[in-house]
Length: 463
Image (cartoon, rainbow, N blue to C red):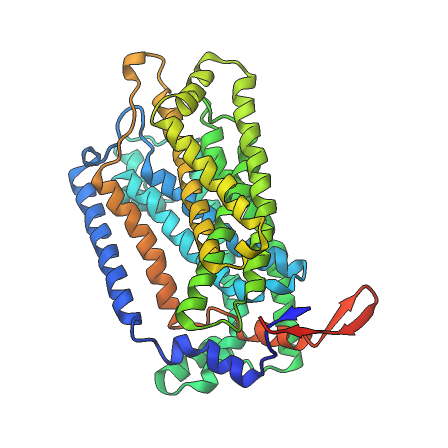
């Protein structure tokens, strides 16, 4: 039995294009506030680059802190796009339809934001540019007698992330072509010409639909290996650093990938709830969709918790003194043990307890709280992997040092969240965040349901 009332094509176009053709009054005010926060964060990053890393809380041996934590976090958020679009598209899950576009766009913006973190973390971003563009001719650093470690796994990240970013942008653009054609036909002037160019001559004939569907399925299948490889390679940034105890774990790759899906799908569910509220899309983002996402998250969260337990058990299994010292720091020393309890509670026990209740899954306020819990917990997870391991890296005890982030780091991290929010609001003014053609296709399929070999009429229920 399906929920909601049937919708016609004219109503779908009118209601889903409201964010583009009729911006709400609060739009430009919200955009200005977010833009101001981003500008402050950019100014702070410029101040840090000018003054040096001394204005941050980074110090020997903890040279990775908030910046790398945030990098791993945003890479994790980006995995929602493939999970909800590619995997659920291939499995033909009908409830995916309202979530696919928001997940795909969030993937692109999360990856773009993630890649700013290593650049800021270098302290001298222009040296990275010199290294990339002068490498075929006269390597800038080599000419100055500076020899970077080309064997480090950190050089794998750009190739993996940019491949993922390119494929994700293609994925979004292919899915947007039919919607660009609708916007082309409903706009005038410069907007009409731009949307006409982006629509690439789309007329909606049978051949074009067939090619668009084939392209979507092929990209869904091709992007899956990239989806797995990206966060696996990010995990190897840690796993290959054998000098840092608690990092060189063989389970890191699946542990990071499942954790990325956990945080990413939670973020998409929260974004959908926000879109439903601010644009009045109750007919499209229904309780059944949020319910389905919550049930998916129960499975994903349980898988993540299994890998988390295994990662801790493997750390104790070797019985290495320095490895146990790190675990002792994480689980028994204040404030790390408090953060560890908060992280596990927010990431698994609190949200799963909420998701097990059908009434809680369909309460959007409670679901929003659960999704926020998950992403706070997953950010803490990355922090608790990075800092305690580095704090106990040195053999000499007088080199052991904890980490206290400065206000500079806090401002830059808050700026990344404002940046993603600003980009999502901006793109909502340009493209529909719920795919028009996908919703229309779903409306046609809602009239009948195939159960095994039998096709039966659908029964609708008012939500």
